[in-house]
Length: 190
Length: 67
Image (cartoon, rainbow over all chains, first blue to last red; front, side):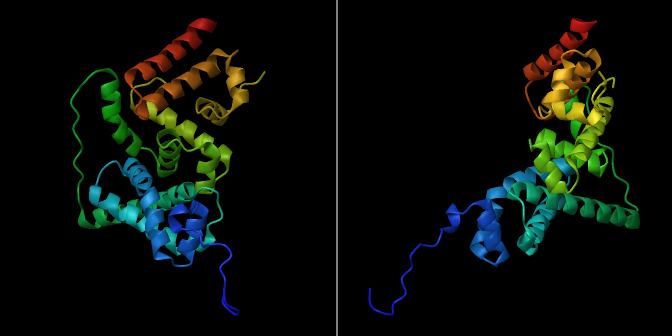
């Protein structure tokens, strides 16, 4: 080492080895590699979550997933949580809600009439599973998002509540209502 | 003892409220609610029919065990 030469005492962390928190911070600084990696790490989970929230319409699904990450990159500087995935779920839930509102306005404007899906009769659990997507779609947004996050995606209640910006008690109350509604829709008694 | 609020039974069905779970051990109505919710969650999350049937058995056990 020559005099006056800068010596790097600690090598920079490789972006592939960064924690989610570090990745989001790098995203906030505009690091394109970090953005690509954050997308790669979580796109499958977000895609599945959005799919469960919307049930159908593959084009809209892709738009919403992309919109979720675009918004995440724009707001990365405000990330304060511990779980990037929960944070992304929260953003995706908002994008789904906004997309649904736009869709309603668009359909009204075009006077489109949605065709009711047809289901063939089958027995037992298969029938329940076949009816489930429509039953989930019939829930209110607030009920659907907690059901998908906690019961289908397996998020802990505290994480899901933080992602949605609601008290944990509110989350569980909505989940109770969602499950009760679904049981009725699927032929349960409660 | 008063029964926990529905929100707490929902948390218990997700395994996140030990108090409500303990209460349900002595309360047929709460045990049934929790078991019914677990049955739905098992089925909805794509668990196989055996798991769902096991949840249904828990419901029957809760009802039968305290009736």
